[in-house]
Amino acid sequence: MSTPSVLFVCVKNGGKSQMAAGLMRRAAGGAVEVHSAGTRPGSAVNGLSAEALAEVGVDITGETPKAIDPELLARVDLVVTLGREAVVEVPDGTRLVNWDTDEPSERGVDGIERMRLVRDDIARRVAELADEFARRG
Image (cartoon, rainbow, N blue to C red; front, side):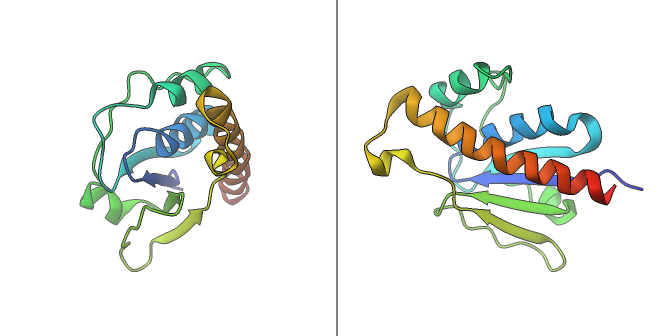
């Protein structure tokens, strides 16, 4: 049985997709092959995203934003887009889901409080996905 694989995608690959990848690595260990990328990658990981993850023991400070690798896209089992802006065309047979994640800034919540809410929303979704992968395995 092969290891399931997931690619998390947001626009800049500096915040939400990096958070999801870090949280999935922690939740699934080596049981899931985890990747992240951006449709228009930025230049660095969002500092507040990294800080919010560090609070729960996940370190993404060594990560860098990257573009979607077409070869990777063709071989992953699942592509998860985070938010409303990232749009990915996936090959036939590749499962695509969108997580319309919480956006606290729309409610006037900014800074580290915003990132904690985003982190917690993504963490809940990642836990459900990790459980789904474990049930299939």
